[in-house]
Length: 357
Length: 73
Image (cartoon, rainbow over the protein chains, first blue to last red):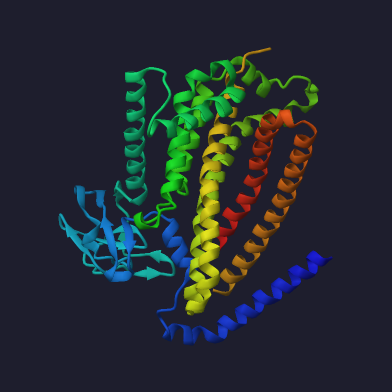
C-alpha cells in the first residue's frame, strides 16, 4: 500500500514537472546556455574523437586523435583537431573532395552541395556515416593499457628470468601478489588442476580490466570510460565464451542436452533454457562490467554537476566530498569488477572443462 | 517532449524497484555469509568466494534495471 501511495505521489510530481516544462518552453529557448547535466554526463561516458584535458567549448585543451574513414573514394585520414572542437556539425573538413562534419562525436559525410548538418527531429537527413576506423578515446586508452601492461610485465618477466624464483623487488613485488591472487583465489578453486592452460587468459583479462578501470578514475587524461564501453565488454565476454566452447568437454554438453536426474517430460523446457544459458551467462557478464563502470562515472559527474545546476559555489561543500567518497568507492569497485569478471570467466571455463566424476 | 519525460520517470521508478530487490537480495547474502563465517571462521575463504559470486549475480539484475532506465532516459 505504501509503495502504491509512493508511486502515485511520484507520478504526480512527474506530471507537475511536465506542466512546468510546458509553461516554460518559451523562456527556456531564450536562455540557450543552460547547463544540461544529462547531456554532459552522456557526452562524457560515450566514446569521443579527442581526449579532453581541460576547459570547455572552443577554448578547451584536448589531445587530438587521428580520424580514419573508409569512404567511396578510399581511405581518408586527418586529425580530429581539424574540426576545431565543433561537435554540432557546422565546421566542415574537406578531404579528397568530400566534406566531413562531426555531430555528437560521430563523423558524417555531407551530401554534395551541403554546408552543414540538417536535422529532422533527431535524424540527420543530409549526410551519411562513412565506415569509421578512427583511433577514438577508447581505442587510445586501450593502447595505453596495453602499453602499460607490456611495460610492467616484460619487466617482471625479465626479473624472474634473470634471478630465478627469488624474493621479488621493486615493481615485481607489486605484481607478484596480484598474479598469485589470480592463480590461487580465482583459477585454482574454479578450474582446478587444468588451470595452467587458462592462466594467461585470466591474467590478461584481469589486468586489462583492472588497469582500464583505474585509468577511468584519472581526470587529466579525460577519465576514459574504457571498461564502460559496451563494445569492449562485449569483446571480452566473447573471448570467455569462445574459450569456454573450444575447451568444453563431454560432461558439459551432457548437462545441457541430457540433464541428469530430470524426468524426460521436462526436457522440452529444460534443454532450451540450458542452451539459452550458454549465451545469457556471458551477456550478464558483459552487462555487469559495462553498467557498473558507466554508473560509477555518471554518479561522480552527477554529483559534481550539482554545483552547476544550482549555480552556487556553496553547493560544492556537499558535492565535492560526496564525489570524493564515490571516487574512493570506485577504487574498490575497479578492483572488485576485475575480480568478478575474471572469477566468473574462470567459473564458466571451469564448468566446461570439468571431466566426469 | 512530454512523453519523453514520462518515460524517463517511469524507467527511473523501475530502476529504483530493481535496486530495492537487489538490495534485499545482497543484504540476505551478506547476512547469511556473516552468520556462516561466525559459525565456521576457518571456511572464511570459501564462504567469501561463494558470497561474491551470488552477490554479483543478484547485482546483475539491478544493473539491467539501470541500463533499461538509461536507454529510456
